[in-house]
Every structure is written in C-alpha cells, then in structure tokens.
Image (tube, rainbow, N blue to C red):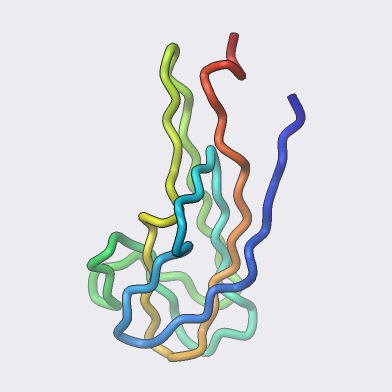
Length: 108
C-alpha cells in the first residue's frame, strides 16, 4: 500500500481563542505541524483548553511531529479535530501535513 500525505491549508489563529486543527474528523497515523515562517509570535499546541500559558510553544519555522505506533489487532489514530491551537499574536498560522490513518488490514 502506498503512503499518502495530505497538506491542509494553513490554519489562521486568533489570540486567546482555542482553534481546532480541523473542524471535521480527520484520522491520521502521523502529523507534522509547522509554525509559519512569517509568524511574528509563538503558536501553542494543546487540547481544547489550550492557552499561551499551558500549550507547547512553537516559534516561526519550528516543527512538531506526532505519530502513533500500531497495536496488533487494533488501530490507533490521531484525530486532527482533537488538536487545538492558540497564539500570542492574531494572524499567526500553523501548517499541517498528515499521513492518512492506517487500519489493522495494513498489517496483515
């Protein structure tokens, strides 16, 4: 099976607003987040309650990769709808590239 990568349009962020990576369920096996190179402040990764005080910060150009390992007989995926962002500067953006989710059939 060929690996398929998908790149989303950059997500624009507003200071003080927890913004989901996607408004719909997108299941993936791996995802790379990159703070846009022209950002003037940091962006912050976290759960639905993310703020500039509790999120993992990324400066312009920095990258964060997240992946899951398959557990035999089951499938585990990342849902981009469950990953949120905040920013200290309105207008900052996050770029997202993900690898499509794997199913247990991919391992048989």
